[in-house]
Length: 304
Image (cartoon, rainbow, N blue to C red):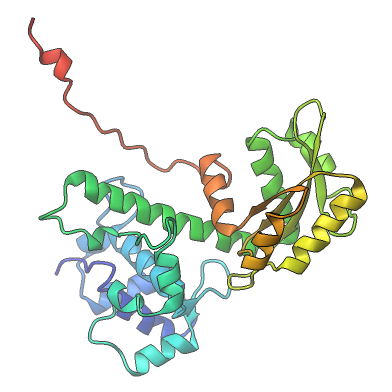
């Protein structure tokens, strides 16, 4: 039979995870046996030649189930079912797919990442019969980037606080601050002054300085106004006028409103903006495959 699409694999992946903590390669083997896939189907590669089709689809099924809170990753490369996932298995829907997952608030919030109220389509949501090839590619591009940004935050949270500090160093230097990795690493994390994690030059000559606070919060734990007030108080004590507060989660409405009213220039970078900047400046990511689209050159065929 043909390899099932990733939405058709969501329920089987959940069932495999219900047995014991597992991994994508192990789940892939169990699912291949369940669907009686031939050796050729098991080894079928994506057009890029870098990954098996079945592995890729199991990964996407696992990824979406995790974002819906039905699976969790106790450690890198492993996943298991959650109590919410157990409840779904106890009373499974007629079809466990993206449409069903959208009934779960946590998944709906993830799925609507980017522009507010703009749903990030996946290739499965696009009707090939009505969509143009460009629309199909655009949907795939958005889905991959949304997944990549979620993976970036997950990996940051799995590492140590000092690693998060290094991420900020890499990002600020990539954005043109600090002058060099050496200068940035010497200054960031050196002060330890209450409410301030570090300081970095705004320019190569060090004519102005930017103070930094970094909070590695889990999703759902917003940074509130008290934390921003403490940071601002530290800036006042240091005679500083510029600060950057970075978190892996979000900022409360009160924190955002407070920053808009103070004389100091404080920039808030939440998890979404952090990953956007990491992608824009190539921090923690690398190109996997470049696709070049060509169009007909009308000028070439225009006769005088």
